[in-house]
Amino acid sequence: MSRRVVFLVFPRFQLLDLTGPLEVFAQADSLFGPGRERYQTSVVALDPAAVTASDGLAVVPHQTMAEAADAAIDTLVVVGGRGVRTAIHDPVYVDWVRASAARARRVTSVCTGAFLLAAAGLLDGRRVATHWNACEEFAALFPHVRVEADPIFIRDDPIWTSAGVTAGVDLALALVEDDFGAAVARRIAKQLVVFVQRPGGQAQFSTQLAAQRPERDALREVQDWIADHLEDDLSLPALARRAALSERHFSRVFRAETGMTVAAYVEAARLEAAQRLLESTGDGLDRIARSCGFGTVETMHRTFNRTIRVTPGEYRRHFSSHR
Image (tube, rainbow, N blue to C red; front, side, top):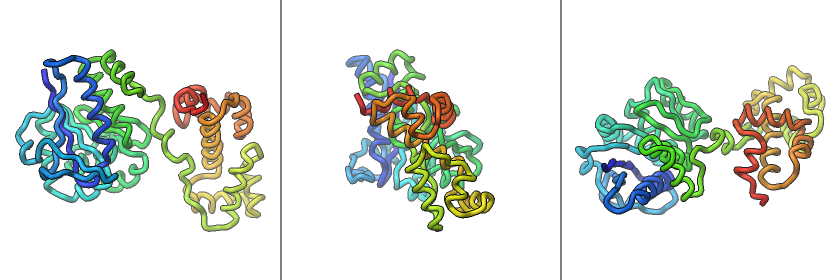
């Protein structure tokens, strides 16, 4: 049986949002041999001309949106990219997505493609994933949607949404597993040298220190001190003394100018440093925990589990370049 997977693209789409999932479905077909195609993929665009992605590469669609308007769809995939901010204000795209979703067995988005699903009214009241860096914007535009910053993908049948860019591969593997079982998904993941189910959430790929740079010189100096003295006493009283401010005033202005509490900022700085050492060195966990200010491996372990949902050892195995 052939399952038709339709990818919608638009000018300045994210190329990897398309090619990542597309390759997963192509790999699935290759496992079954000639004459037993499991997925029929089709890239659809507004016009028959090549569509230029945000990186400048042009893709020639298989069909126009008008030509695909009445075709059966098993899985609709709406990709993301910079151009989605324009597409959500174009009724041609919004109406086409709404109509296509009505005849699809399941509807999915990759990265900021969720914006277009939301603009079509398909996500109200649902849990949704998108790129971590777009969550605040998404929540402001679509207040009736429950956007979540951490999950790699979310299944809220019949809607599946994924986080940023490479998370489209995770989503496609999950779709294949749902169709044909875990063994097929594992074989594809092994061929592509990726995880069947990536550990942790997308927080591990965002900038851990997302704080704003403060305007006050004293606060900037404290930030620089923290980065260079992770093993030292970085408690609120100690840092307030360094800034020559009262604890209450320091706590208030630090949060106002960075968007983070002092404790959250310090923990993020230590976590980011530990991740960097796990990725780039062969240092033991004891040494990393001490040098980053966690004190003990147990404390570092709890912080990793709570914030990025993997242990330090798991993080090193998956992301270390030190072999």
